Length: 234
Image 1 (cartoon, rainbow, N blue to C red):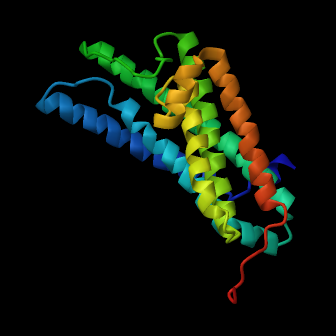
Image 2 (cartoon, rainbow, N blue to C red):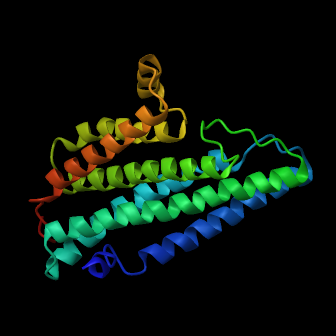
């Protein structure tokens, strides 16, 4: 059963993500090399660049949902089975990208240490030890799950062509912002101010992210369970 779900949205999706991430990593470290060659490395380059995989996972999940839902359902897969497969992809794919992104942080730290460069991060969970690295990985995993699931949710809402789709956009923004809390990164103006006022951090912030994951998957199920398929005539 799990092997069937791993073929959703498509058999080569996971390997394609790894290849794309490898190209991304090469570009980032080439930028670091260029900065070091022609100037002074100002700080972590990987941290701001790590926003790209977040958006990448959200876009990949949204695109995969939009493209592969009708194809799978047309070939006998139920909506429930497709959603289960997309959920597996969201969690497993996010874990894979979180591990690769964490490896990027560690590789950058080692490179900076070897060259005597400052490696200051704005995220609260900077990978300065094995324990911090595991916490960073866990936080990134939660973050990527939220971004991926939110991408699928927005794709489902717009696929349905419901008037509520426009209202789902700001909701999606709030959900995405909450994911940043897990790694101690800024959560955006509205959500960031709210969390600061509430003094939410550490385990409470992670608990919030877990709750957000549950909410996103619940919203995704509500959007998908009876979603009508588009045809060439509609």
